[in-house]
Length: 522
Image (cartoon, rainbow, N blue to C red; front, side, top):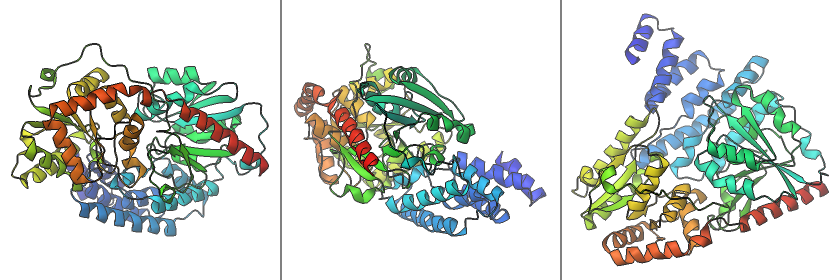
């Protein structure tokens, strides 16, 4: 395909389709620099097209090779965003509509995986979104915030593209299920993109909702009328930043009070989002410095998460082609969570645990093989610095079904959490399997999920204060069987402290009631 598109450009250098196809080809294959180059060429021909400006300046790699590359792309993003803001042209109806269509197709998902405080950049982008929404008079909801709330029950709406078997869907079903129906009416909105996905968890969301709607991304403005017609008091976005179609919805005022929670744990930066619902155990002391929204601390880990059911038949190590007597360190995060400055952790552990096997999951989409190979190369370089061969220690498994994945947790010895962006749902599932979790809390909430979970569980022995202590804990768990079993037993004995927590539901509902009182007074 690349050869054909390049030949088309050689025959006709003005052939825009060839440039567009090459951009898409490189973007799909994870070749960020090449994708940017062709976006730049197209942007030169169409300087007023916001879409190609975003593709030129705001595209980020999925995986970085070193810290210098992170800093380079962050600086590029920062300067590019300024250029876009200063040059945005909304003077004609066509330009306004094109800008609106563009923000339905772009998100800053990978920005949060650089491990930095994104408040300033997200706020700039949030202001850009609001500017485009207002210019288009989209949904025409300017007066909705002023209305008084006088219903007998508070109407709360929850919206996400992931009201299904997905991390977000798993984390928040407990909220929907356990709301007090004497005081609250619950509305759920499932945003469907190009590939609509519904499953057994979607059915549960439907069952636990008073009203359940699907929102088609292909016709957002008309579809959002469903939310307006619901006459909500509070609208809660379970995540903003994972799907581009959520942005114009979030940048509109569809309810008097609008909140965001940590399905994608980074500030939205959008002026129309009033509150961020977070966890008191996961946030650092200076947490408000990371959010544009007013931060609300819900008790414990802030979610009512049911204890996962374990498979009746556990697959053994031979199924996964693992060594029978090795010490299995499971590290099962999406590969973009692994920042290059922490790669050395694995060979440092391997130096002391000679029979260690580190298990990773291969990347999961059309870019999968290339991204997985890039990460393998990083590990090879890191292990080589310690005179070790990464291929003797590191194993990459394909994506697994639920039975396979939970079996893998059950037969592993230690769970190695990622730095900067820790496990959430994966940690909750690992603990259900009594798997010891090694974590080191970061500066931002998204690097403190496992920390908060272990604090609530009451198993703090495996929480490290620094990278060196992280290595020490991982080595001790790998080398000391009796200590490892002691931690396993403590995890199992404390399950009741972690799962099906209703305290956070009561606090959430009290926040809703209190904020409604404030709204009515003002």
